[in-house]
Image (cartoon, helix red, strand yellow):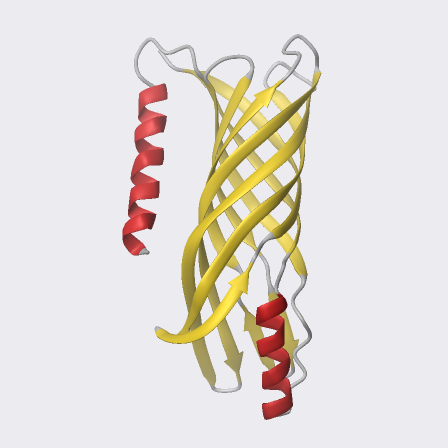
Length: 215
């Protein structure tokens, strides 16, 4: 899994450098967003409820959570295609006081969107992408903390709307679906054979600023 992660990062970096070559007409920018996600956590929630029965805890199911900050490098190779290379933090928590469970992943994603009607201030687009998802979580209680980890590849498709209200600034909305499943969550690097499924709807709104033209 670690090798797959390195390959994903290396391929993404190579693509960005190729686009930014001297003489390129690409326009670069940044985007900051936040949102909401639903999760297909049926297997994980079954395990959670079995643990509640065995240990006497009261952890509620994890079915959704906030998303963000979502921070992206934007690249426009031309007026119709937008590439995003993003760091996305997904929230997935549950509490049974005094215990806190956090299985939220950090995702590094690459997305390509085709936008229609380049001459209009409000534009619609369709995008597809993939990403690497790493659980960076824990189970914490009084005097003790267990680190929760695990990683895997995910895919997503989305519809987008963009309103460019100045030459360089725009507001963006995204609605789509993510498939991202981690087959084996680890507790302090020990396998638990627990599946964590972050597949579900994704919704995001944000602001973007495009400023740099490669020379």
